[in-house]
Length: 233
Image 1 (cartoon, helix red, strand yellow):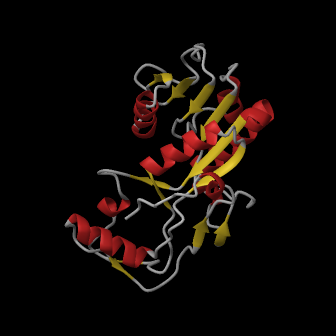
Image 2: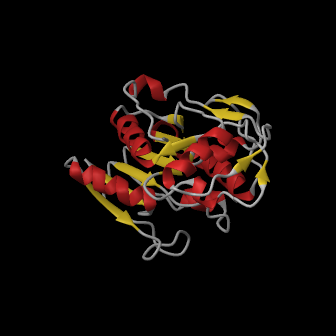
Image 3: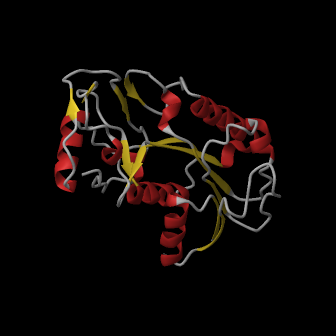
């Protein structure tokens, strides 16, 4: 099969490497040679079209969807758990989005436009915060002041886990919406302190409080990822 990867960034490039290592064919675009709304959309054959761009808030969501004229059997759009905004408690694929930021609002609108156009062959994946190798939120957490929300839980996903979810869900022909978040949800205070210790960084200070007690889970991932050993630690 052939994958078309629109967005060979930190995730898309690694996905292409994994696919090629498993004998799959793929082509891809990078922001250095392709700009949505300016360049013609790639018209190369692909059984699976993987759309992985940052929120293009300067582009109307309908225009974004209209750019995609594909005969692919399956289309995968990478969204984000940010679409759940400041909701509290457990959020699953059945939870209605409540976007708070312009970027999250754009993602929700693009999801709607793509569903209207492609419906039965569309898979929308909403990953949590992406981590892996030298990419981790602990590197950017302020260390010079006490932070709120130490009792809040993390909603993260390792790049390797996300890639496996992408490939397995595609192989099964899964469509609809899929949250991709590690099933482990440690509290921020303890988790980031432990990660800082492991990485030899200054320990962040968290208040023993809750600021946004949102826990994102999936109703579906466990059905085809039963052997999941989380990589967030």
